[in-house]
Image (cartoon, rainbow, N blue to C red; front, side, top):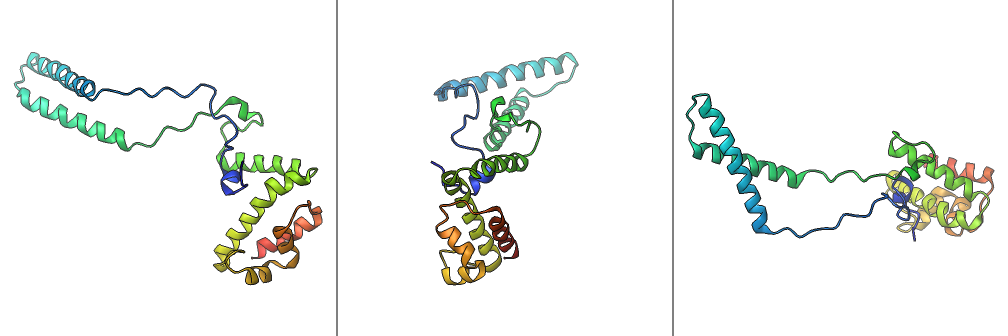
Length: 191
């Protein structure tokens, strides 16, 4: 179950599938097989390069070609180890609101709008989804602007937020009216 944090606001949902196909099975590869494949690759490439150069009447040391190819292969293996992981595949089912080709922020805002629209009619949905994120945004704003959170300095946080917003964040089981929400947002923007 989600706690309604900033990751939920800007990140993907954990309860939705990311891809339609199952995860590929991880095979254990033999160390000896890996070494043999790389040696075979270097040997075949060396034979091709030496044959091509000798057909062009260019003399080159076979040891030099082997050393150069082995060094190149080691560099390629090192680069493969530090490359970034592939981007996750997205399911077409998640793009029902036509977010194809848009950035993550826009998709997060659209998801937030849908959650807020559904929460207008359901107090429980509001208290589970909207209120925890609102509280986390409030704490983040207090931390960035004043160096405190509601938990670290409750007295100062209450002074900055005001009694009404403090009460809603502390025990906001009911959905406030739109006029009250606007005043709470104004307080957060002034922080």
